[in-house]
Amino acid sequence: MKNPYPYMYELYQLIHDNYPNDVYFTEADRHKEDFEDYWKIYESAFQIMDKVSWENLKQEALEKSCCEQVGRKKSQFFSILNQAVAYQYLRECGYIVVPEKVSNNSCSGKATRENCCLLICMLR
Image (tube, rainbow, N blue to C red; front, side, top):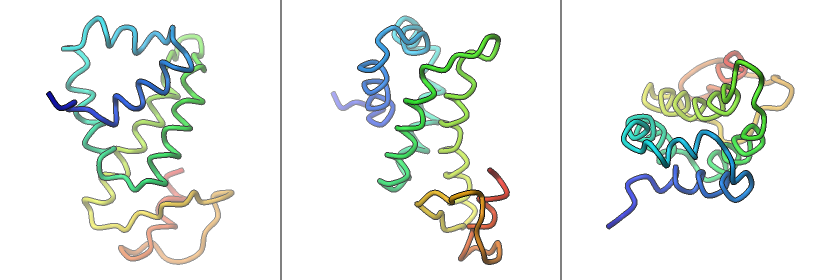
């Protein structure tokens, strides 16, 4: 049977290999049905990402996996995953998503459907 969530599984493996006691994925293993709706949302967003963006997202998610702030738990981790959902939304709106990171929140140009660099800066 084909894995319905190949990207989520890849992210799961990466985090599990580096942080085997990660609470989020331990709970996901125990209560798979409860997590499946969330995984579908993220999986569909991950599937449309270009390779560079996907690799960047995985690295950032891994870095935030170990950062559990008191009271906020995995909020930084999920903020990274939610960037993929924003990426998907922009693509669905017709924007061309710039794959490389914008350094120092600086970019030039106008926020148009051909050049969304300024829009991305404003979101960050």
